[in-house]
Length: 590
Image (spheres, rainbow, N blue to C red):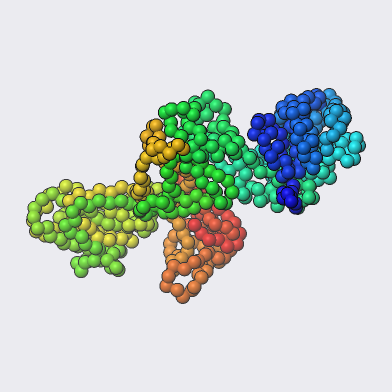
């Protein structure tokens, strides 16, 4: 007893390829097909239908062998917009001619089960009514000739009205439902010859098309398209430099499999490139195979054997990457002879000490002493923090030689964070005791300590990562040891982000007394800070709550982009700022 492959399912294909494998598949697997479009008819902008492509005479053997298949005459415009428009608008009677031509070919091939309309590259949504009317007229013509004849229509993949990724918004599934017996939705082509590499039919797109189609059309009518082809994208140079219009070259599924398994090589299937299987894998999410031509080992960002902050591991579209959202100071000290924090018992004026940090207030000054055992040349580095832009200056001296440290640049990587800077470079110190004195320039600057060392250097760094690879010989398809003819090259896959405003200040309202500082002023209304746990000593989640106008009081900057998370209302008060950012309600300030 033979197996019924079509029980509870339908499958439609087209005789597009016309090669020997197509005929072999029809002969061997016709029992798995329910509907076939005979891709043998082209329509011109005058409405005349001509026969081209796979000859009908070549198909008669298979038509007679598989009587259960619905054999439809496929009429295509080869994706030519001018033909679609002429038929839609009945330019010079093109649609009238087209309708009579449809009857003619059905009369010529009376055994056909109906017509398959493959008209592509229509126009935008403004033409949807006229486009629907054209399909209605085709449907009525087919049924008027013989009501038993079927009409299939090929429709672009869409996940909503106006939801075509290729601009084919003339198509409204719900309007066309009444004018077809079946609809083959071409849910492929999200990635194409001119696109970036990607899945031809990504899962999320397919699910969107399916969900939309079955809600506005009779689900029993729908054929859901799946691609039996792929693309080989060349991304190492611009297409124009390679003599091509687009990056992609199409492959059948069978050809793609041969590339992956090493049946083809990249020197026209001749030496010197061996026949080596390339790196390929199955994407369990999009349910598609991927291959990287001439790639034999591959790591994602998270596969690093080690990496350092501020690099961090993230995921985007199921790809694992390393990225840095800011830079951290990278320091080198050589040999460290003295390492001291900001604590001292020798001070005058207002100086506060906490956890090894000295904060200078009114007339604040603090003195530190250290000793070196031998005379020589040293570097001295100090560690500071400017907690806000108006707390940005301090005087520091070494043995009476004073340096003024200050910062006023709008963007600087170390605002509101600790950083090391040079107090003295290649300074000659005698053996014995030396003195460092810090004194106030602007109240609130924090002094974390100092180091006496052999060689100090610093630079902003996005971090580094280490990967371990193991180049080796391979085994070709004949079992011989080999290696790529061009040896190995190391390449990196990078994504450059679009430029964004540099984040110079972030306010999350998690610190106590934020609104009571002199950085904010209430112009009108009432503002409070809501805290997730009012009594917690930690910086718990908080947000600004209230209504009216709240101003940020600082006019030392220009060219500011002030951004807030809405709902809420935020208004700047400094005249050098950009226009106020306002939104009513509650804000999570930033």
